[in-house]
Image (cartoon, rainbow, N blue to C red; front, side, top):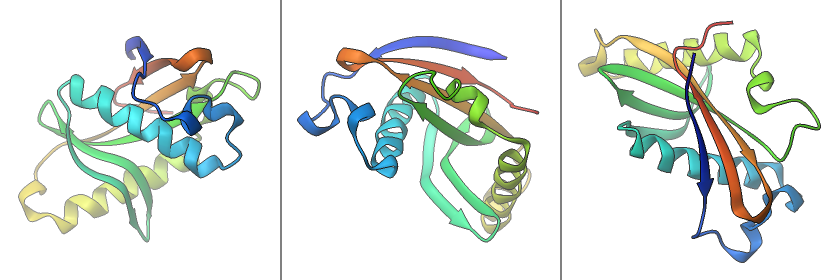
Length: 142
């Protein structure tokens, strides 16, 4: 379910990040997307607990609490639709790894033991002139 499609103008973007599409470092491009995602999620009422959390089971871009749920947010950032949309980039394999990692995170935090879990996808398409489109999909299942 698409919760929100939002156009974002990032006025605080540095000179080197103005057009991340040109950026050769994919990790930096992804980090830019995660920074945008964090800002958008906080505006939507998410409480951010962790960023880029890693375990044996996998990595979670953002771990947050929203609406009483423990949420793993997978951020997919694309510079255009040349290789498919951002939301098409999440595979069933990746989703399973994220789910296992989220359960591992919950197991390590006893205060979250009975908290329901879900995976959200935040798909960001970076446009020209610092205009970005963000689409939030809650409780993703493939």
